[in-house]
Image (cartoon, rainbow, N blue to C red; front, side, top):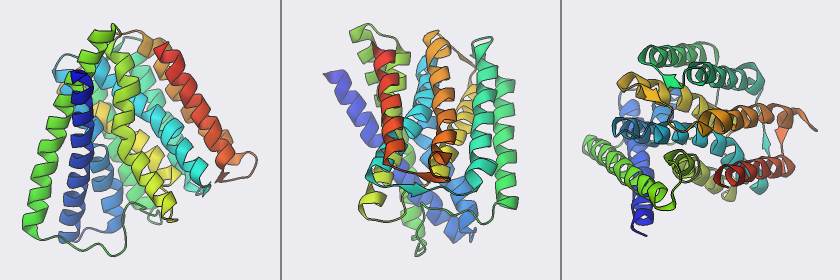
Length: 312
């Protein structure tokens, strides 16, 4: 029971901390007169991936590498299976051309790069982390130079810069909440794994990954209920790219990550590759560049099968 309280408290702090950090980051960028498209692709992406980043770095430093890896792999599966699935059940979405020209190919390349780095030796080395972060940097440069027409859905047009003291306050509160939340979440997750006699990896790819995907899920559901533009497929795919290249890249630079539970290599990583690939035919069949409730159902069933087969 205490472990569940630690997990609940950790998730609450992570959600609040991520939101505060996002407000501070956007306010700071507006104050510095940085274009919105740049804010969306860099600052917003980094802020919304902050929960995964802090949890993964903290878990790796605390000696729980499977929590660090499982969190990211599970989050990527949850983003497409759970978040996109639920969003599509509530309302269909049109898919932009950039899905098949940029977003999906880069996500698959990032996924395959991670697969090659981790599968054969079961370890993410520092130099591999450097390569992943460098790949993200080149991807962002490409986006900023050639994808200027991209729409940043997370930001409204009437954003006003916050007073400096509020920006500083949000920055401080967000950082403290993220760190405290990650500590509490890891403590609860490890305790729960020990109590039920399962590995940290199983807790990571289910409970922890769903928890760190809650901000994306909440944003999607709220957008659909308000009949506003739902979180786009491009944004979810962008989140997956960022999780792999930034979160795991930075974490492995801080401390190399070694796989402890082989289930991550024999099961989870293939589910991640599979659901990432599955999105491509769903986008084109039966109607080109359109996703509907049937696609959402397929994604949710796939995600449910992953959780059931992983836990059982």
